[in-house]
Length: 102
Image 1 (cartoon, one colour):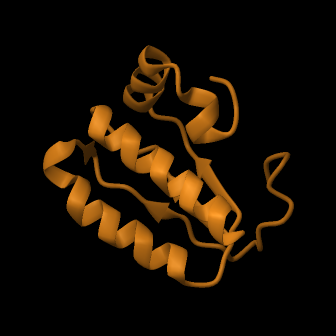
Image 2 (cartoon, one colour):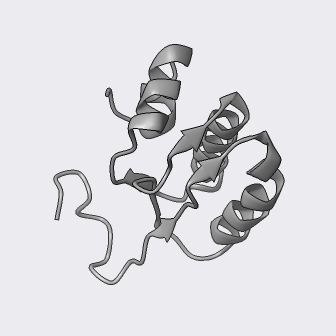
């Protein structure tokens, strides 16, 4: 288990995102993420499969982070995605979205 994830149950199943998180997919992904936020926490989102992310996708992940905080639900992102890292760095939002520096 990675450091900082001790509050997550060993059986927490990460929500794995599809390869594309672009404006065309944001609405359907938003519905999925909101549904997960309505359930019991904590929530882990696996971003390792992301191959394409645009500003709308980053906005969705940031909104998810903020909504989780508002609801008092612990949210963590796991996995590595060069596409997401690049988008977050270009927008200066890596720490705001992931909760850590990239």
